[in-house]
Amino acid sequence: MSCFSCCSVTEVEDAGERRVARKIGATGKEPAPVAFAPTRVSDPTAKPEKAPLKTSTGNAAEIARKKKTGNGNIAAKTFTFRELATATRNFRADCLIGEGGFGRVYKGRLEKTNRLVAVKQLDRNGLQGNEEFLVEVLMLSLLHHQNLVNLIGYCADGDQRLLVYEYMSLGSLEDHLLEIPPDQKPLSWYTRMSIAYGAAKGLEYLHEKANPPVIYRDLKSSNILLDESYHPKLSDFGLAKLGPMGDNLHVSSRVMGTYGYCAPEYARTGQLTLKSDVYSFGVVLLELITGRRAIDTTKDMDEQNLVTWAQPMFKDQKRYAELVDPLLQGDYSQRGLNQAVAVAAMCLQEEAEVRPLMADVVVALSFLTGGPADHEGSSAHSSHSTPWEEDVEADEHGLQDLIAFDRQQAVAEAIRWGSSSRHGQGVQHQTAGSL
Image 1 (tube, rainbow, N blue to C red):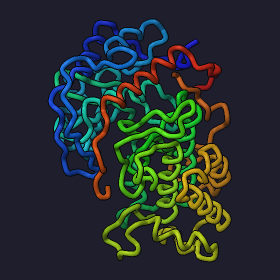
Image 2 (image 1 turned 60 degrees about the vertical axis):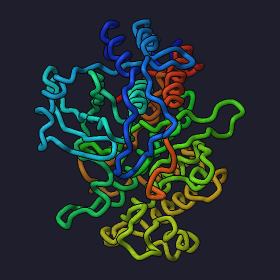
Image 3 (image 1 turned 180 degrees about the vertical axis):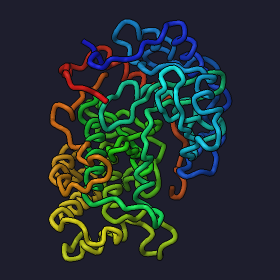
Image 4 (image 1 turned 135 degrees about the vertical axis):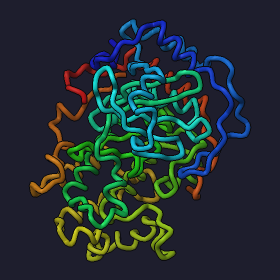
């Protein structure tokens, strides 16, 4: 039985799917690096590909053709460039809601369904290449959980590469936490803990529910999106990578996440484990507690690196109050603060093996999400769901990133991940509802 059969998907006609898969697989020139942050430096040895990408499970077109068997997993709808141009009013500046090294994100409304969406238009000369695009399409087609952003579809017309996501009305956690304007109300303590809890559940799903496990690799406040109820969802899966399997203790990777969030052992050796994500989560949790950026060059030298600044205070519980965001004006639970700081400190251990599993982090944070009914939005408790709602089974910089992303290997892994899911991994079919 397919591990992914519990999720209903939008069907795409074979002819259209083959056409799009061929477009995705056939890359043009290798994109040149652009000095946005975070920077991913192009591999000087990489060669442009002229044919559909070959992998251990065949090329992308072959994978796409299997979808209608009921076991295929490229669930996302295909859009034409004209449809998305119409949805975004020809990508007008007043529809622009985000921008980065990958390109631009626009708010749009699909003409046929009247649904609000976010359309990410990849910069053809930017940091997210053709292969990362395919990785993200595959990963988000295969992964379904209430704390992962929902991929609605994609466009691969000509050299255009666009991704269509559900619209998250409140933008990113970064927009509400770091350097907010004076007239904006800061996030309450309990909302911050609910956001941390939801993000932790998303990581727990990737690490322990997905089969094979997935290392997110780029967790940061700008990649945690919020809906109108401050319910968090992880986004941007272009750097996601399969976790170690069998007797392997780690996977090797030459790409770095974002400076300030990257685990020290990964920065030193390029050896990536699930505990690398745990470290990144610790940085995000510390940002939620302090209201400070992971790296802030505007501060004094000894305060520029958030983790380095906070570590002396981890050792003395009497100093925990020094960590708290002044914007909270003392409105927080002392017991909750003690536990949140303890969780952050454990996640930020220098030695990866002593960091907790995300399942343990979820349990610890679950006790911190209940509080006064002054959560932002209708309820920040929306991320604290009942057990049968939580576990949706797997359907189956440095100021710069250090070295180039091994694009072809990443795509091969993503497709192999989909292939293994089609053969079933013994995961029980649950009747949980998905977002």
